[in-house]
View (tube, rainbow, N blue to C red):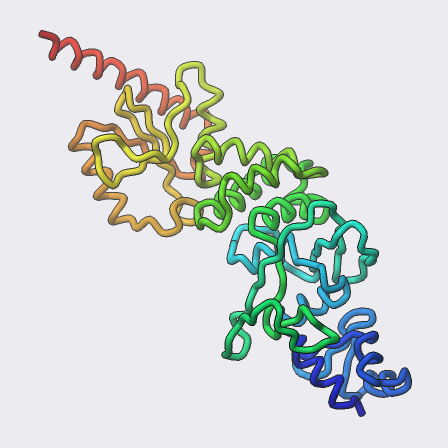
Length: 352
């Protein structure tokens, strides 16, 4: 049977242990083989990584096994790191865990784990399993719970910072998922915009960090990252707003509006797209993408208040924006021209 030393080590690693660690804890090759025999107390999770329990595997075990395979310096990135950050619009965090390791580390990719060697190794952030047992999640970095796993903390996994995770998720997903592939540009760009906008909206990643990662990114999908970054830097905060910006930039009539800036002289109102000189606002009505829960009652009150102040507000749904963009653009252009006549007439009427 596995000795107590090995089980104490496994407890630090959420019940998992590597073959090398088991040997260092005093188990002989025959003892390890006996433990992982069919019906035995241990089972194989990855090549050379074993679970010392018989219950179901949770996400923490999938992540821990991947980190044990890749080594102490590995950090989770990509889709799983987006999930760990709490982002909803990333690629599916499925059967493959993507990890970053320093370029000099020689670790191979195996089933369920993609190892990416990099010269731009980010500082790790610890993710704490919300479904783990109660107790203090963090210990001082100089506290070693087990000499054979000096960096391990039960229930805590190292991950890349959100900006790196988001950009890596896009680039890595472009190779694995058709809906994230540049070959399907419209769908892929919509997904990239949604994820990057969500990271900014939820304040998970700042613009400066996203810009650094976007400019450093290489490979498939990196061009889409830079397109989405330009939209976000212009002020767009949702994928449909980015698509509205694409539409507006096609117009020979409309100049670039101001995006998501507080309305001067009107406290508490931040319109999606605004042409101040024409007192014209376009708002994208999207509960899923826009604002993360802007209640219909608040929207109605805001628009009534703007109407009282002489502003014209055009609501546009993402569905109509995508199904009939020409009609949406014609409507905005007509309102812009009409508002120009109104503002000119008011200026003449109030001239001394």
